[in-house]
Amino acid sequence: MKLSRALAVAGFPALLGLSSQAQCTNQLDRFYFGLGAGGSLEQPLTINSSAFGNSGNVQIKPGIRGDIHLGWNVSRSFSTELQTGILWNSIDNIAGNTVSADIYQVPVLANVLYHPFHGAFQPFVGVGCGAAMTTFDSANIPLLPVSYTASDWTLAYQAQLGFSYKVTSSFSVGLTYEFLGTSAHDWGSGGEPLKTSGTLSHSIVAAFVWEF
Image (tube, rainbow, N blue to C red):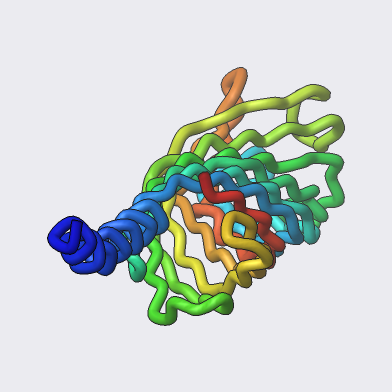
């Protein structure tokens, strides 16, 4: 009986240690799902070829961005994720000509995030790369067909800087600055050329993340 008690007393701390280690491992190896929404600013696009000539800029109005993330916490400091979503902006003018048109971007990115601190408040930085489908959709543009819609796929890259705050053990909120860039666009359609430089987007996004 005494031997059994001694073994039980000796083994209890070990069991606690294993339990604690298991909980830590579960916390590190957790998948997460995130949603984000915010505003987006687009830098002007340089016209390389268009019905307006081969000079001037495409001026773009402020728009909105929505994000979806599915990721995995590799360690306490690093996580990887797949991200997609949509950015929508209206065009103000092309080479000084007022137009009625929109630009839609759907990025598909693989991101790596670094979290230097491990408390409830966690700032982070991240980089990503992938591709983006960008659609130029117009209702009324002089010198182009009445209805002009074209899409292309381009290389996409991204940098992120933000923070998250753990409200509970499995739910976080945060704010992120996201810079998204693409390679040059070719939106030619119906024999009409429309080539521009790549899009450069600056977004501030509020995020909601669930770990599971």
